Amino acid sequence: MVSIDRRERGYAHRRVKYVIVIADGISDLPVPELDGRTPLQAARTPVLDHFARSGRVGTVATTHPADEDASLATALRLAGIDPAEMPWGVSAIEAFGAGAEPPARTYRVEFCQVNAAGALHLPSHRLIWRPPSAAFAQLVTDLGAHLMQQAPDVMAGRTLLPFAEGRAVLVEPGADLAAMPDIGSPEEASRRSWEDVLLETDGPGAECAHLMRLAAAFLSSCPQPGREQQFGAVWIWSHGVLELHAAKEECAPNVLALVKDPHLVAAGRCAGWHTADPRNLGDDFTVDLKALSVAVMDALGRHDMVVCEVDAVLRATERGDFDAKVAAIESIDRDLVAPVLDRLSRFGDPATDPSATGWRLLVHPRRAAYVSTRVPERDVVPFVMGGAWVRSVVSRSFDEVSAAASDLHIDPGHEFFEYFVKGGLARIRA
Image (cartoon, rainbow, N blue to C red; front, side):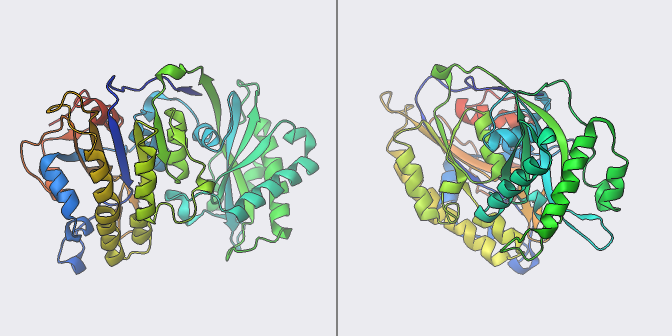
């Protein structure tokens, strides 16, 4: 069951201005073609290096071996939420991110291709989720209408919502929260015929099996423009329950999240952040860093904290393009961090001027991602932070080696958000 509480999460009483730059996948391994350096080491980042020398550099554990979904877990920890203390189904958080309101019973709906043997071919993008395209959102809407027409009794009160490209959520608002169907993950159906797996499903899960058969028939006859490989089936699984405790609005943190990654959107909603609709941000919002820097600086006039996401580094990693990854890191330094730092510095440092507002900046990779594997990996990641009351004893550059040599290692990762905001209240292991 998900229990979402939007009460204050460790904010200082002073109205300090904060910016968090999520440079997803910036951390990497040494690349032979870069003379044995990582892309972060090879990139020319004078602003970040100068910032690091006056701030703090360290590592943070953003993933854990027990994570059911590492993408969601890293997003929650970045927002200061401990996944282990929230006994929910992943689908409930995804449904909340997709706009569902509690109380509700929820399910993940995985769109898959089907191979010649009738087994599901699970999407290769399951480690990196993109916002749903307009075409996919329309496909979800059409499928929902078809299921409602073909199985009105089963679909009564249920709604199909797009969550990410290739994934939707099935939501049953105000449902009997105790009666939850149970159906296994799609991995078993990827090893043999998915229809054979469904034949073994009975009891409450039979309703989901019925909907999956209807969905497969619909997808086989429905044109899917713009897709090289057509979806042939869906898998409905991972039930959860979404529940919300009333928030005290006067204590809610004034945070704006300029993010598009669906799991970051969901985590932000759980933390009580204001999140922009990713469909309204534009396709290049997380790639055009000059435009992003303008949006961040504008938002600082209305919000205490702005969280922004950079997507270009992860896109280059997906392609295995280390040169593009280096260029993307250099763009973060030049086009985003430099102007944002200039704007933040105008808020002053209360350590030297008691009347100043104060500010802090954090560059957080969220996940490591290797150009050699082209996907995010479970590894600790380096970070750099600085601003009011943040002082460095040892001067370090911002890269994987310098971060590993630091005495600042934060584990568990969900405590990092409070450490960044309040300045050292997290339990830190040297």
